[in-house]
Image 1: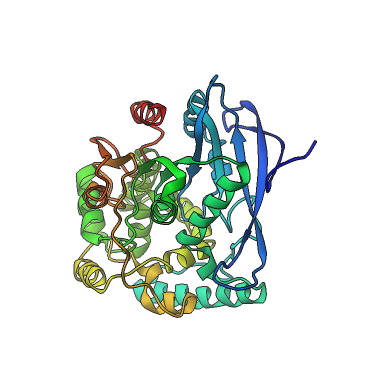
Image 2: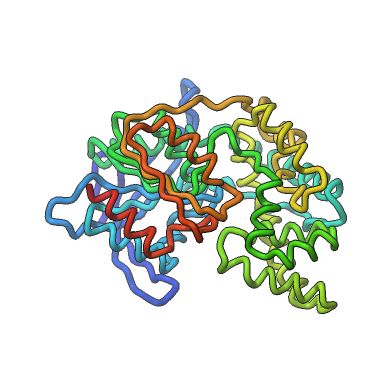
Length: 400
């Protein structure tokens, strides 16, 4: 039976985790304005799943924000380590997993599959491929009445406050990972009075959308020094791309590394199989590129990453946010991000082996949170939330 809580429509919902567990939950939607800057705007549907708390006196709801950009939170519900974390958190409060606008069960979807398969003939060829396909996707979005600027972190942060109001609660807490921290930080700036506390795992600094090639090279040297030497000798864009896209965790990196090692020995079959899977993913990366182009690109940051790219293994790490591509998506690329100051209790979590969102950049943001704590996981890569010790710290922090 459907029932309404303020503006949020809820219904019974069940799903099965990837390890076979059946879970009973609730699925809800809230209607939001697509463009709050317009006097009249289309209404869009933001979907979420709620796991009810088992606590006698629950704390404020905990809202999970997934990264990507573009990975649905509803998919992460099915991933066993993440579901285990959410289930444990229900002893503290209701857990709400959001598919932010354009993603998953929300409508409309800002998805767009590139019509052409990627090419790895070189950085220039890859850049030309990205530019042409992004231009095609932008045209498709316009036919559907969609504007990538309406899918920014700021828009998603405002959606969170609409969701909070629709549920009729005065405050929420946020648990965010990677790009989800971009949304969470925007919420901290725009709606601090409606937040209780925030957990920011693998903090995506608002002014660090462009990644540093030097740090990616150093991560590869730290985790696989022998492989680093082979990759530098090969000088192949496809090899670099496969490794970079797998360096979120040892679980994803190990099979990619083995495929590259086999290629270096003359056995190309494992590598070709891995690249076929990767190419399919890259062909569906339009949303990630579009949202990335709504983030700030300070000139000094671009100058630094451009200098580091010369001679770097991962020289292509920022190709998808090249200025020529972003100009296809947004008329003006933001050049600066505001500095954040907040009195909210905040837990920052960084992996010591994370080149994507390094602990040093998280620490700069934490400097503006006088009530902030910073957990650096010594053996952690980009993805730390599945680790049991990290989950214990998250639960303890949100239980205070």
